[in-house]
Image 1 (cartoon, rainbow, N blue to C red):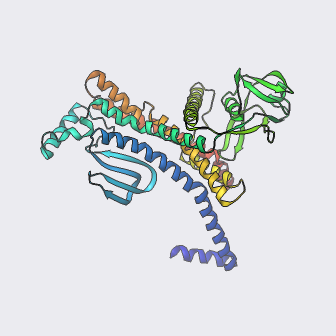
Image 2: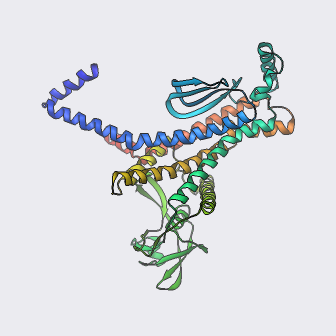
Amino acid sequence: MLSHQGSDFALYQAGSPVGGRVEITNGMLGVLSQIVTYVLPFLVVLTTVVTIHELGHFLVARWCGVKIDRFAIGFGKAIFSRTDRHGVEWRVAWLPLGGYVKFAGDLDASSVPDREGLDRLRSRIIAEQGPGAERVYFHFKPVWQRALVTVAGPVANFILAFVLFTVLFSIVGEQIVAPRVFAVAPGSPAAAAGFQSRDLITAVNGRPVHDGSEVTGTVMLSAGEPIRFTVDRGGRPVELTATPQRVEIQDQVAGRVKVARIGLDLRPLVGSDISIRRLNPIEAAAKGVDRIGEVLGTTLRYLGRIVTGRESGDMLNGPIGIATAAGGITKQASDVGGSVGDAAISVGLNLVQLAAILSIGIGFLNLLPIPILDGGHLVFYAYEAVARRPVAARVQEAGYRVGLALLAGLMLFATWNDLQKLNLFKFLGGLVS
């Protein structure tokens, strides 16, 4: 009621109630458009990936006979809840930014209580439910079963990525776009190296290449490092060397980012430089494994360059960056033209690919040996398997705090990157000045 009255007052102050209402209607349509373009694809992709991750934990825990209290998608107040015959509450909460599986008796923050904590928990369970009841609790399962349950989440993410890539390669096939030089930027490293229009890049650092993405992927992670190119120029091989320079670009999907470039505009010749190879299920599966390896390899190389100071880390994305990427992909795919059905298929296929890549990222992140993540739990279990006793409570508590600080710092850094890419701080500076 107050909001409606405030809007009417503003409209009359502006002088034209009718025009003002049109502006508000257009503004609302704009907001709805942004939600449909950016928020919904992001939530669909993220919810799918996180649900599969948690389902991995859940299914292996069920196979190991672990008592489970809850499987939740989202956080906060439940908007849907049902308890099955096994006593598991299936819940969908109002904030769809993650999910979790809650095992019975899982009260400790690090999920690895020490020996004293285990003794207290066992005594309480036996007192309440009788001798033997503790055997179905996660903390009293053999260490190998607990490790299996823990690693099942990241493994489920890699399986999801494998399935999605395999389906994409089976249905769409493998599109190969030859790395043909269309233009060379004046004064660029490529111009200094001697690249010419219509050159066809056939090898990078001695490794044969067939698709333009192989060239750009190598260049992006080689700032300041000379790259050897072999090009086909009118039927004869020519050797060229160029050193990528980091430049700031405005990417339609990722936003404003700093990446390495040599100044080449790669565009295929219509007809001769574009091919689509249909893959049978076995070939598609093998290609899916290769693609997962490529994503992991690129990720590890990029992180290694950050550690050694050769990259700034501004390509690390947080939730805002993922939402921006999802929105950019949706907008880019829907603008290709054709019918509504064609646009929907294009958007769907691109979001499936984004889900596969995001799933690999979440699986990899959770395997990092940080106590609050699955990888940290695996480190605790490895110690327990060797030492024959759980990690001391004070060590767990310290590790949990350090892990939480590291994860929070990483999220803040990624969110800062996201906001920088959106030029938000420059916009705010303009408002202040």
